[in-house]
Length: 327
Image (tube, rainbow, N blue to C red):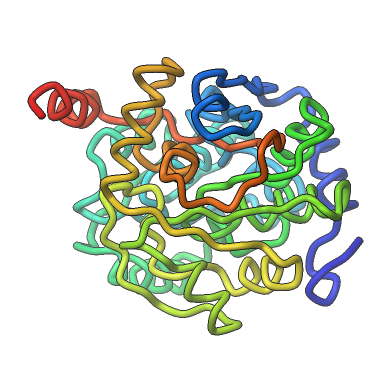
């Protein structure tokens, strides 16, 4: 099934899976009895924080790199990221023996900047903030001629991310609802393509912070729009959702759900305290949505929820958890 003018199809996701097979971890789908009893559904978390580099991002990067020509590879790679895509590109480039340059902004997580450099990428932090960083990216592409590996708005990247959806349905074939946290939209658009292609009646819900609603606003407008992105969940702070991602999600009827900062913190504490998953605040977004009590779910429904992003700074996690003890 192809969507949005044949932009992306289930076949694309299945081919991506073949290309990256054996190169990444098969992450587990973990049931949560506690949360299932609390919300009245059968909840399972796709623990993508156990993926190489700590997130789903290498799936899309490796699929994209498998399509590059030798000339494109030799020009070197370039991208932009708050951190997890930066690490994924750095890792994949090192595996392929390629040179990678990643644009980040000075206020990005120091731990993620260091990790990207640790994997072997050159990191440019000339930009102070996100919007300026995107301008810096365009400038560097023009100056260097490097090949862009976009963090989300590329059908090949989206197809790679969609392999998460195939795995969820293999482990939970009766899944009726799939929750996905959203920054730029590459993950949810890829997963929606896979899930809707295999189970057309299943619901796919995009979860975003109220303070960073790029996909939510994009779906309302029918096109990518720029938003203020100021959530404490830095991995979800995309200034806009990808044009292609919005098109795919709109065509497939992806639903939008916004969570508050307080709900994100509650989700984070649940993941640490009950699931024992050391995820980022961004990774706790799906748990936050379930814990909010505001999701329209039927009793007993089988729910798959993605947890991605295991690159939280220890002091950040400690501060959030300590605040609960003081409350």
